[in-house]
Length: 387
Ligand SMILES: Cc1cc2nc3c(=O)[nH]c(=O)nc-3n(C[C@H](O)[C@H](O)[C@H](O)COP(=O)(O)OP(=O)(O)OC[C@H]3O[C@@H](n4cnc5c(N)ncnc54)[C@H](O)[C@@H]3O)c2cc1C
Image 1 (tube, rainbow, N blue to C red):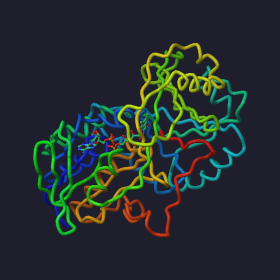
Image 2 (cartoon, rainbow, N blue to C red):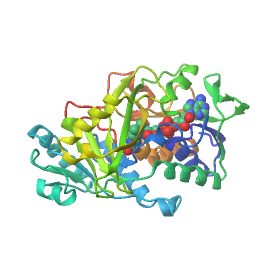
Image 3 (tube, rainbow, N blue to C red):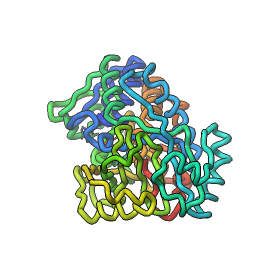
Image 4 (spheres, rainbow, N blue to C red):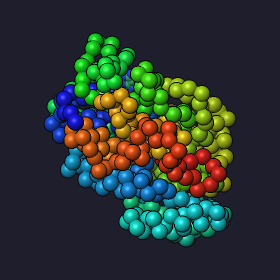
């Protein structure tokens, strides 16, 4: 157990949350970010927050995160809004309905506020949707949206206000280890000594930790959105049609966002490319549902890189190098999980244990043994929903 200096590497949602909770607990903390706050995947997130998952670990974590986001103004900053606009998973066939029906027991046990609604009730919420081809939807009433930039800046500013030193434009070049224990890092502006180091570098996570022999099984997936003109509605639920591998919503400002197809990437790349045919395919997939959508002009698009793990769960915990923690591989859910990750990692560093996250289940060693964590499941054979 130690409570000396902690270096948090990475200024995304995860790193800033860890820095905030550490500083709030009175720890000496320095956050090192190679670019700017929220310049990685965090700045590309849609902002979705949900507790409709398949694994009890994730549902319980997300219930706690939703509670935290609901009180964010009192806890962290009042420059923040949690839009409880909901999530709507469309039930296009029996296979999809029965998967969600099986999960309802879990949701009732864990206090998740979700209900099945009819096609008519879907139409009452989004009148431009063609409901002829599905038999209803699951509505997640606890779910909604936050602004990724505001949230992350709020964590960073609150961390500073609690005494953390936040250094942007400071790439970490090496991690220093002596006798199996982390001792600091080497950066572009020199060496920093530390008792603990937290690797919160997202898609860069394995690059950094493998320098000291800690290999993380992380893959990369390109994901992004088209931004279209308005459909005449605002702040709609996220509408997810898993059988067509598409999702869309009307943002708070009225613009419509439509998901692009997810694509595996060989390497981590900073700015994946979107081709014209990708845009056309995205519109084709959603136009069966919203016939008017193909007429809307495309205003812009954005993409980013998801760091995914073999079981779809994040990697959070201490590594084989004493004092070196990792919080990476969020498989598309890092923004929404950031509060509990900050709470858990800071607890472990300051008090030696935490009841927020079970590191035995989510830690980096879990892939070595025969006991595997049940993967976070898809409801169809399509790509797992990441928002
Ligand atoms: C299109 C898209 C939509 C998404 N939608 C959602 C959503 O709706 N909800 C949700 O919860 N999640 C969503 N995600 C996923 C979410 O963005 C990530 O899971 C989350 O942002 C991960 O946060 P992070 O802090 O771990 O990583 P990042 O935000 O990538 O932060 C890592 C930081 O580390 C820095 N860094 C890397 N190497 C070094 C180094 N050597 N030295 C110093 N700094 C370094 C990087 O510059 C970066 O700023 C989406 C992602 C994409 C791409």
